[in-house]
Length: 342
Ligand code: HEM
Image (cartoon, rainbow, N blue to C red; front, side, top):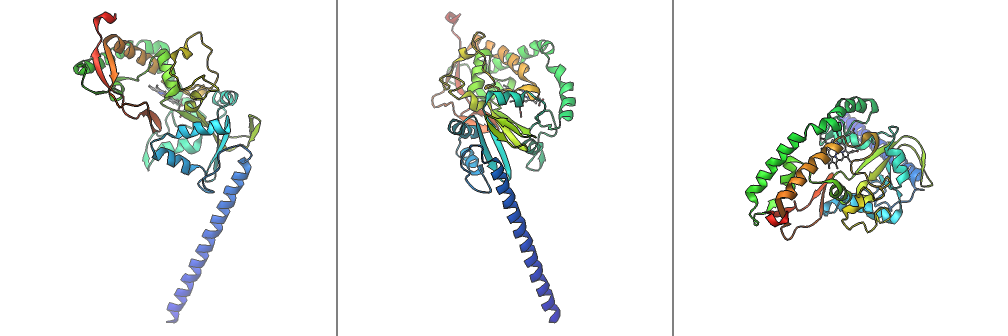
């Protein structure tokens, strides 16, 4: 009986101590979160939804209601300016749309990719996802070794040699479209075009990527304090860049929602660090030249041979799956071009 009493007493004390430790740890964590808030709160930003979750509930709400997260970023950029702060638990981030700061950070190897975000991409849901490959490598030396191996494969001269392959692949797409070119069979163009290539070309490609950048943004780690737009940014936080947001801001592109490929005419002024669908600097897209060459070949063939009309009910809405894609799949009816068009 006494032994049972003693064990119960021990267990009660143990539970009491465990609860005390958990409580102290929780209070210490909350104090740390408060410290992080205080460190970055001089930077303007939307009010936090929640002390611990920070702005996470707004992201979750946006993504669960078929909106895209970068749409929320755009509203905040309009409201809080070219530099604003976000919080999530004990992390602080700054979202940057100042061209000068974009240039400084993205063009320099001094600012590595944000380790918190990119390490999550190594493993997703407990399974190896992107590994420590070119896109995700955070360590400069690890990345540089891989990039040096891959660079020659994407050089312009090597890619020119691939024109034959691009031609052959786009011929296959043409054959598939031929089968459905009766003017009434709906064809999911997004799926079709993705079978062989990417669906963009020169000026139209550039303007498309302004409004619909498939990879909407990137992030970098700011290891040291820096001044951006007159605000001191304490080191040890992530900087987020969104080409989707900059591309839709009136201050960078007049009448931003109008689709106007002439913005990218060779004689038009070049956008200054506010347009970067392939990212910028040393960690920019390796497939940038490849994808554009491939797209030009296919689009030229499409325009020569077919007329496309969107099946009614299609929208320009975007589906955010990390990369952006057309929500309704771009379902088209396809007809052969009439002779008199040439
Ligand atoms: C329209 C098509 C494409 C767009 C808009 C695009 C966009 C981007 C962007 C924004 C990044 C930076 C990602 C980040 O910072 O997390 C990136 C990186 C990368 N992309 Fe692309 N990409 C396209 C096509 C391709 C293709 C076709 C390939 C390969 C054949 C490719 C290979 C890569 C690689 C290897 C990286 C990592 C580069 C590095 O960190 O050194 N991309 N891409």
